[in-house]
Image (cartoon, rainbow, N blue to C red; front, side, top):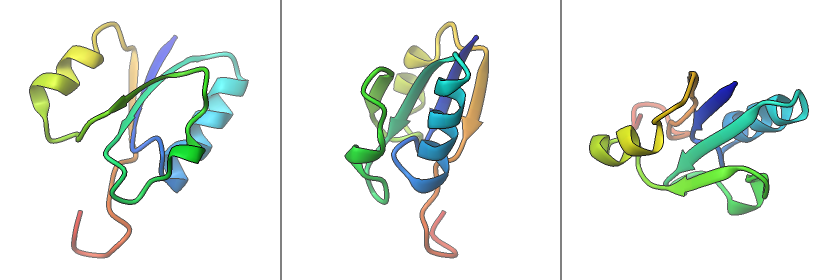
Length: 80
């Protein structure tokens, strides 16, 4: 199963990615690094550095994806 995680470099997205990767799923993800860290990204996944608001690019990288977990958000209340 192909799973895409937005905000994959952040706290929620990276922990979810590690869990699902260890369960054997194929993981894809994106992050714009406003609050995430490159060190949080698993090296064996398909990663895209782009913002979720760029609809045309997101649609291209999500081709063939079965499930999307939307974890992208800013850590400050009111900014997401």
